[in-house]
Length: 360
Image 1 (cartoon, rainbow, N blue to C red):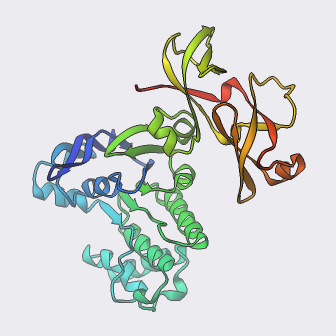
Image 2: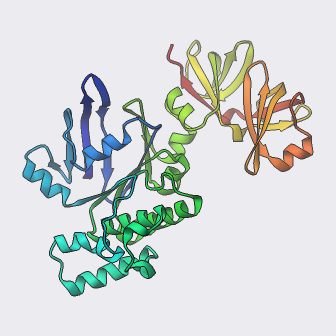
């Protein structure tokens, strides 16, 4: 049985649909990441799951319990959850007392409380700060206090809203390491909202893509990022090469796509005549100065229109009769002398093309 499940969950403010027909199931011990652009409804969904707000329609089941039964049921269920907000909330007291407050409210004995808080302080690497006022800490340190306070009560469900938003890379790494330790130590069920797609890939068992108030796709990170279900998901997860075309031929799972006179070969079971999009990730494209002699079925001559450094890589934009973007190493960029105006051959395999139906 799922620990938490939503059925046709909707939230509406005035005339605006904030969430529409949200149906998700999260199993006990699972880490589920909600990814989506700002304003998609991620925080609203977390507030509903934490039973802070009442949905316009639909139901939320926690461990099989219908949380809409009564206010008493909602309160009882909420005591089994913890919610860490995007902007960490810390009380005007010591770090130790911040972490201890939830245990005190639950009547935990002093000896047991002390042992537990000290253990958690060590886990979050804040033992040396336990007597400091929590409001004097940095943003990353305050977030660790908020997470520590949440896990002190050992919730069955931990909700995290953008846990590393506005943090520097070092603080982000520490928070992610802390979340990983929580997963390993407590086997806590976690639902986290993040706009950092790579963070969702690193931490989650499954991912849900929330765009324009709807869950458009759920699945493992490989499924969502390599096989997006529609154009909106493909664009959000960074598939920059989305080429419109029509299936011109099909033989034993290999299709030929006509893209304005250019032919792209791909592995797909779509039928002849279907209007589709051919999606190719930039990192799956290789560049050469002469026609490739590889087994790749797709090779197009083109002219570089732009070359932009991106960390250790270079983003190469090419006009092949249709636009293509490739990501290659700086070393390869320098070795091939790639720059604006250079003629190149862009090559990718048929298996690197993900085909989705085009909505027209």
